[in-house]
Amino acid sequence: MKVTINRSILELVEGDITHQDTDAVVNAANPSLLGGGGVDGAIHRAGGPQILEECKTIGGCPTGEARMTIGGRLKARYVIHAVGPIYKDGRQHEPDLLVSAYRSSLGLASRHKIKSVAFSSISTGVYGYPMETAAEIALTTTRRYLEGHPEIQLVRFVLFGMMAYEVYERVLRSMKEAGRLNEGGSS
Ligand code: AR6
View 1 (tube, helix red, strand yellow):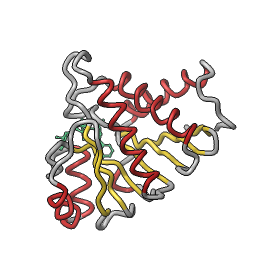
View 2 (cartoon, protein in one colour):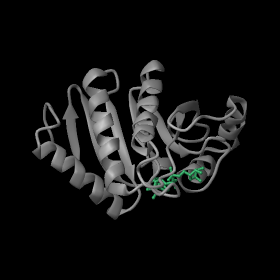
View 3 (tube, helix red, strand yellow):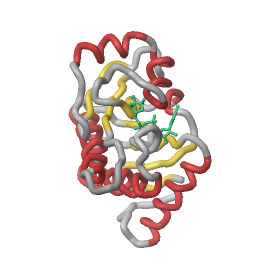
């Protein structure tokens, strides 16, 4: 599914983040930035040791923020390492921290003149964030950002498996039906 927001495209695909040809891919990292399982493990395996070497020089990243490294052997030139919250009960500032992880990632992309970004679904694996609520936050935060930042031409959400894809699609469709997209066109 693809929608236009202001002058940018927001699209959803089912697939693997490590195969994306966008300028940057966004990793679901942890505060150490020293690797882990899930998306993080897949990105470091596919991108090779140069990514970890650069991560070591950064010295970690607080929850709700993001840091950037080279993409190593990935097609993407850069990796944006975003640290989402661990979900407990939704009352430990998890929503604000997840918004902030997305905003920080998009802000980094703008500052570095990155025109296309592929996101994984931050916090919805090991960190346990319920997929539907996380999708609402991810898509709403991105929509708001793109309305004011046409310099990012493409934001792609890469969902792992059809179940995740269908949740994101349902949320995006309902945003569209509620007239909350303010878009120029769609397909
Ligand atoms: N491409 C796209 N999405 C994927 C891929 C992939 N190759 N692999 C998994 N997903 P997770 P988190 C989906 O656990 O919840 C790491 O150990 C997955 O199905 O990767 O933010 C870090 O080091 C899920 O929907 O990230 C941290 O310690 C989503 O990506 C911790 O996990 C995110 O799952 C971060 O946990």
